[in-house]
Image 1 (cartoon, helix red, strand yellow):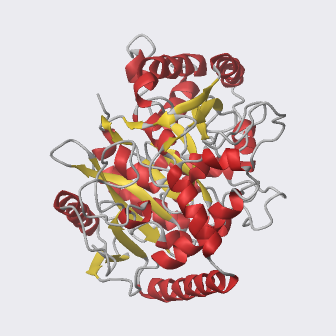
Image 2 (image 1 turned 90 degrees about the horizontal axis):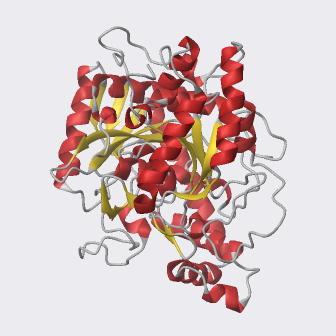
Length: 481
């Protein structure tokens, strides 16, 4: 295989394809890692997905993995797979600056976040850390520290956020696996914009430490090329960690093993008997790009062809944006309360604005937001008694101009990122599993995402349905030139 595949072809392989080639002795982790590092050197000066890169460390880890594969003793299915980590998650030996000038890099970095520790235990080759907006506060990726991260499909456009570096890296062939975080859509937004898979599991499935200032809105989630890769990455990072008091027990069965068994159908109709609600606008979204709507309609048609029983229905809640912003902006205010005046002056201006709003909320406001959140959770619990899954567009739009918080087309009058992400943040409030998978492209060649949402703890069914759709289409195979 190594004689037949050029470097660019190597970086197009998925994690599961890499592991299969390692197992057969047709490719080595060193070759795969060198190809990814070469791709980064060629592409990242334009895309700007990485903020920490350690080629020597990556090659040392790849060499150790190669020895394990030669001895037929790999640590797991992602052993030797080039992987990135969002610069929100702690990494031992590397600074975690969170996109902020306020974080001093010259300190001891002696701890891994739980998911990062599990990556190391699984033998993943951690190539570096990916960019984030400051403190992961918004749905695009630019910061005073690292500048603008761009979309590999069109570098004039945003990659989305806040895991925009992770999604851009995966889309551009700069590592097939990435760890991101999702507090209001932060793996699904860039997943949709960059044409890759972004998965937010049920809250607590992936342990998180230190606790997020945004509380139980924030999840750790994979960004990958395929749903199968998402499953193997989830298997690696869901181990127990005592530092997360709210973590769920590890799953009894691997996500990868359940991909083929979590659905009622079989053969040509893997979704037969599945009750799927399709909501084009959640009952309150006022602006949906026509090309996005058509792509998602066609994707729902594929689900029907696979046997799903589709019903057009809204879940029956009003826009919970006030509750989300109360919790999110208050969290931002808490995260920055220790800063000096000089440090505050260096904050992303939009972050500084929402911190001011966050400080203005009262305790009663916060409790009211929590009450609305709990009511939304109850409503969605009842909804999933009737429907196995809810599908929606991931985003109402495609990637817009890089370097701004909101599209400059006159539709988004408040200018906040929460205006144009109405399909994602409600399901952080409810802590449900939700995935974005590629489902088409616009005439401009920009990706469109389909969102699949399940009941809490029904992660395996969400992944299996997304995998069935992916297997029936070829959108995921497309790569930016």
